[in-house]
Image (cartoon, rainbow, N blue to C red):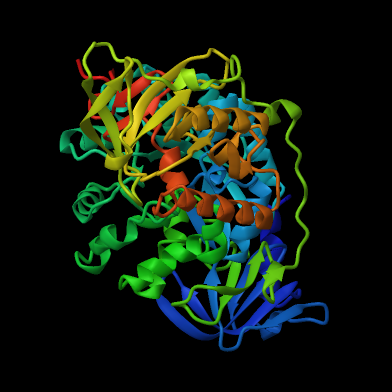
Amino acid sequence: MARKKLYEVSGQLSKVARGVEKADLVVKNGTLVNVYSGELLENIDVAVTEGRIAYVGNADHTIGEQTKVIDAQKKYIVPGFLDGHMHVESTMLSVTEFAKAAIAKGTTGIFMDPHEIANVFGVDGVRLMHEEGQQLPLKVFTTFPSCVPATTDLEDAGASLGVDDIKAGLQWENVAGLGEVMNFPGVVFGDEIMTGEIAETLKANKAVTGHFPADDDHMLQAYLASGANSDHETVTREQGLQKVRLGMHLMIREGSAWHDVKEVIKVVTEDKVNTDNISLVTDDVYPQTLIEKGHLNHVVRRAIEEGVHPVTAIQMATINVARYYKLEQDLGAIAPGKCADILLMDDLSNVEPATVITDGEVVFANGGLVKEFPTFMYPEHIRNSINLKSELTAEDFLLKSKSAKTATDVNLIKIIENSARTEKMTATLNVIDGVIQPDLDKDIIQLACIERHRGSGQISLGFAHGFQLKKGAVASTVAHDSHNLLVMGTNTEDMAFAANELAKIGGGMIVVCDGEVLAKVAMPIAGLMSDQPLEVVVEQVQGMEAAWKEIGSPLNAPFMTFSLIALPVIPEIRITNRGLADVTEFKLIETEIN
């Protein structure tokens, strides 16, 4: 969607503000949420022309015969929400389908980090998602992926990005900065690629978005000194307070599977810190959350529920985000010159928009979208990304013991519900005919990660604890961040069946039992995103949730937690196509303990 720059329309805005010419749209008689002063101002009008705000106040002098007038009496006039850090791929939707859901919930702009598709298709994938976003009524800004792959020594992705790629990508219009710099040890210890990417971003005067889950003060301050100046991995009040005091932009996350607001928002409600350098983000949400709870409006609501004043919570989802990305001239507030991204709400605490306006056009009203969205087709090679050496068999998932004992000790991954983190755990497992056995009674089930980009045939095997599966198997090509093929199950026959069936549909997520498919979500776009409408994907995901429960897992969003157990940049232990990764020491370790 072509949007006019402020300098292109400033003269027209001036004429409308003075009443010389008339506005295209006037929103009348609402209560303005002023994110600059923190006030609620009653009986305010907002006049719009050329997609931008020309006047705020009593705007009768801007109304002409052709002016569209919206009565906002008894409603709040709120700036459109800006999500400062999120991954569209995690919604399982295309950018277009995600935009439909997000706009309906009041999100008018996002800063997406498409490092999921970058790990599969590199710059080509990033460009396609970025281009899809530019034609939508949702403002889609990209932070160019920084860590592709997330680590260089622990896993194999489908592509890699270097300093030259980032330097070029930062020149694209609406690329707002560098994507989350997950390789924080690389930054701290002077990795040339990491420091080079950050240097190019600073030269371009754009934001270096961060990712710092560790508790080491020395490393944190070294990380900040590099130029990486935000973080969305904060999970405790103490971490949040430390980062705010050091000038780090604190992004407080509330996604589908990780719920950090309750604890981290205490820096606001109890420590009473200045909130100018704090924002609210989603990071990862899945389709059912979008329908049932919302998008960024849900995070704002959660902050309010925890005791944050509604205006303060709205500031953390609007103007604070715009300032962090140095886009305050255009976004984040309802004031002269800003893009006319406006929400009308009946209740600030409920945070459900009745009307959504982007660039001065009504996009959502009366419970539905009122504007057509363009279509976008991904090329065929993006839709055929699952490359296995051969069809998998049950024997491929047998983990042979290196000893002749009847029992052996193993390292395994203990997952934590509603958390992106894991814990390193050990257990003693039986060995039968030289094969290490799972122990369903102790909730220790088999796990595998299969390289799926180049058909190398590489498979790593391990065990997981915490999912509580009693039968069947699951598989996913959504396996952050390298997105190899993850398989987990109670028996090797179902594991092989799940992997092969998933490959046939171009990737996605699947649940099987006794050689039958219980549920699946096909994601042929890079093995990461569906090509179906939101409503269809929601129905499929609901079926998948039910299937996870049917095979025994009681967890909230278990498939989201499952998709993260291959991410070797968040403590403590993960599985990649190369083996088990100890993230506290950034090294590969053996599953079987010698």
